[in-house]
Structures are given as C-alpha cells and as structure tokens.
Image 1 (cartoon, rainbow, N blue to C red):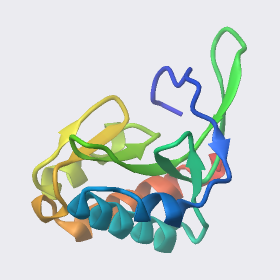
Image 2 (image 1 turned 90 degrees about the horizontal axis):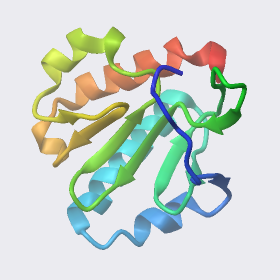
Image 3 (image 1 turned 180 degrees about the vertical axis):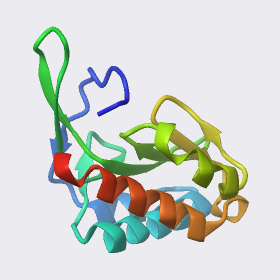
Length: 141
C-alpha cells in the first residue's frame, strides 16, 4: 500500500451497501456513487463492504507500518461526500499519470480522487484506472 497513514477508526463492517447508497440525500451524489459502485463491482467481480459509516470498499489489504503495527483496508473504494464524489485508490497515483492526463476535471488527495460530478470525467478512462489498480494490486488482495 503506497498511501500513507491509514491509522483511523474506520473499520470493515457488514452494513448493507445498497441501503447506504439509497439513503444518500443529494440525488446526483447518490446516482454517481451508485454508478461508480456498479463499475467497481463489474471490474472487481466482488461485492463491496461498508467501511465505517460512509465508505464503500472493494477487496482487502493487510498492511504493516515500520513500527510493526498492522491493519486492514480496501483496494478500491468510493464515498459520496458532500463536497465531491471521492474515489479511494490505495496504490496511490504514481503509476497512473497517463490515465489522469486523459480523465478530465478532478482533484487529487493522498489516495483520493475527488470528482465533483461524473459528467466532468471520461468514464472510459475512469474504468481504465480502476481496472489497472485492481489488477495491479491483485497480489495484495
């Protein structure tokens, strides 16, 4: 896992992803989150899990910090945040610069891809990114 400090209280749980998505108040955020979740389902071939109360995650990673502390996280994820639809790319963005150059309008955080609305990005490029990351990290899933 390339993305930094995941030391937080967000834990895997077995709440219903579809129920969570259906309750997203903002209709565009709800539709966008559902579209990206469906895209991730198709790419990964696995069902997502809820992480905390607002993260939809696919796959599982085990990680160990230099100090020996360990944890679990997901490989790909999405969250319909109020400010932007947030995609979580746990490998980081170093290996996907060429994809990002073709994606469209977005912002980056440490491991977060912030998209205001899906119309701002090329969905086929987003699909390429998600496919690349999922298969690139498969050995860690």
